[in-house]
Image (cartoon, rainbow, N blue to C red; front, side, top):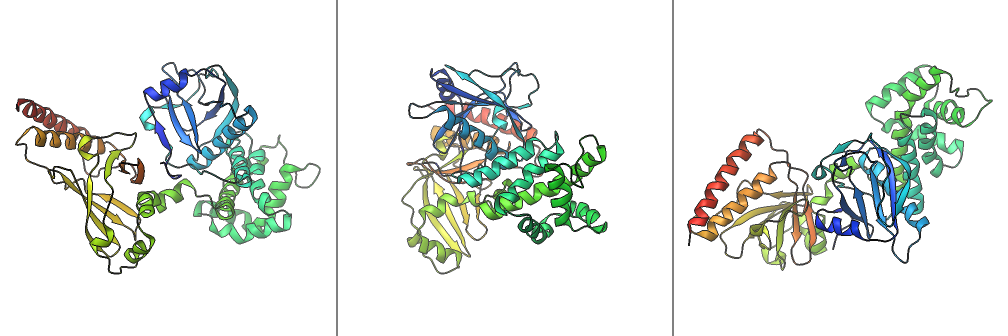
Length: 439
């Protein structure tokens, strides 16, 4: 089971198998300033497997997303879905996604282009994507994508697209100006500098955005009218675009309850979301309220697996037993341990701060006295080596393949990564020799 707050990524052989399937492929080609992978992968969202088509070794194709049409689906609906996916990606990543056209056929055929930006496959991750939205909310995101795509191409149309999001909710000019007036102070200091410039001329900001920007772009023959030949009009709109974009984000967040990427990061609810779903609500309330909860009340009938993102598994960390060690001030201290009890690691669930902590600096490891114990140490050092290279810890409910929580990429402080990895590699090599010497 995969939660809505987790976007599953699939790499390797399953991707190649999916690409080889013959049928009716629909491929959405676009230009984006988001880093795009070299290699293909699959993401899963809203019950669909989507083929993220990488740029390949020649890097001569546009970024694209492919989908194999199912028997009960039609082209129009899937194209609509893929367009909406671009809008959701725009919102979730802050990048622009400028639609270039559809291709396809019996296999996922692409559009040729030599000006694509790339990153390595494992540097590509969609950690957040708004899902299961109603049609009006999706329309708001579509308008936001339109505004973002035109941001450095056509200031006037970009402004109008962002403003339409306010218009979508507030139907009349009077309502729009009233809303702007109430919410303008919520923008940050960078926006306030431009707002002050406008207001210092004696112009109310709500009137200015409506009359001198929105109406001046949408209509001609009125005063003022945006003149495409007048560079001063372009410069003015360039200064005003950040304001209307920020206001459109406020409207989307408030009215449609869609979080931004920074909201998701700041709230970090994904760290404990799965744990909260399997703990009894009444017990969870007592923990948060710092009421007395016995360890017996919080017994665990499940095993957990500690992995790194991209489904990196380590035998030692699969199917660990769990027991509650302590519950105090909203924090549950767990001990995760192997069946042979040679390895254990503390896990902390801080329900007050919505934080998950894996104490990877203080695991209990056996001494290398036999083959099994030595192999445990090798696996742990391998995991630790990959973790400190910006690894992303995930905790899964083993039997049901259910994600309990995940962390952000680890950013070690005061650690010489290259040197540490070199030392760990040397230690692993020596331990492997010791392990192999046991009969």
